[in-house]
Image 1 (tube, one colour):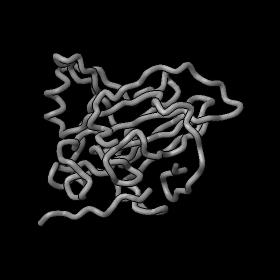
Image 2 (cartoon, rainbow, N blue to C red; image 1 turned 90 degrees about the horizontal axis):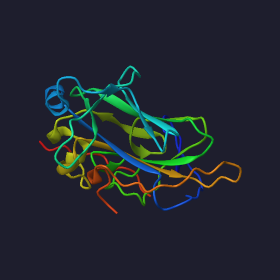
Image 3 (spheres, helix red, strand yellow; image 1 turned 135 degrees about the vertical axis):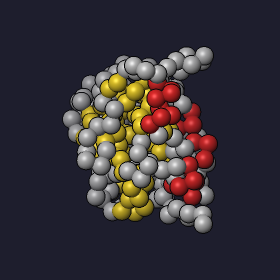
Image 4 (cartoon, one colour; image 1 turned 180 degrees about the vertical axis):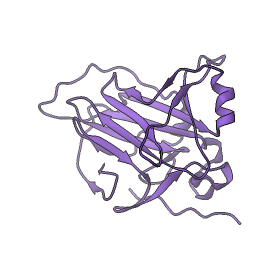
Length: 218
């Protein structure tokens, strides 16, 4: 598992309480007009999502470090209840997780179906970042080495990282995923477990090395 995401990471040993995640969530992103069609005229808006029964706050930040508004999409025929955000092509963004609890969590994050740590198809079996009690974790991009990342940027499908790396799949472009696993801690109070299933399976399309550099097509 990785520790730290801004400048440098290090590997630490940690054990999950269960192989079943405590929460799995996903956000959809697209350009503004497409998002407006998906969410309707007066969507519910918020600046973050609360995961694991409120233990962890998840937000997506713009280049200035401000949370991007998340807009609830209209329910489809299948009862989907997801949030979307409008991205500006070429702009950079980061993922922030803030632990509000006394428990430690492992955070597995994916962008466009790719694991942000190893650049491979997202899987709940992958290792993730450790988020300690009352701490925050900022993930700035796909990790290329222990001290270097490829920044997250909103891009058209043809320019997206997932479209220009062997492990990517263009069908998963436009989804950001997060999964949380509570970690074993001797003195921490354990939270009641509940089943968690991905709201958008494409956020984790697969079931360690770092992310390979993209190969942009001419």
